Image (cartoon, rainbow, N blue to C red; front, top):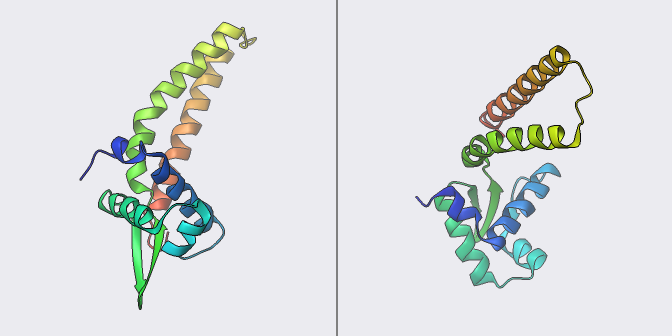
Length: 137
């Protein structure tokens, strides 16, 4: 299996993932190749090539109905990126806040707010990851 970072490095694959996310958020159970071709304005062979890479990386699942194939987002592999990225975002936000002088709270209150914020972000991430793993999601 390809490295997840290599897989999402391609803009067309990111566009396909975004389209599948948007469609699943709208309640769609899958998106046809022809719909992806139409929405992205990319050739069918190109879309099929990218869908194969996304399938191999387990970022999409496919359901076959007759001669049609319907693709759905399988976002669980993206947790690896999320886990890798979060420490950079936390450190970057702290540095930006310090540079802007955004922390007007006393040190003890700022520390409590920081701890609470990190705990909330961690809990949100853990809950979203667990929900994605539930059957039917």
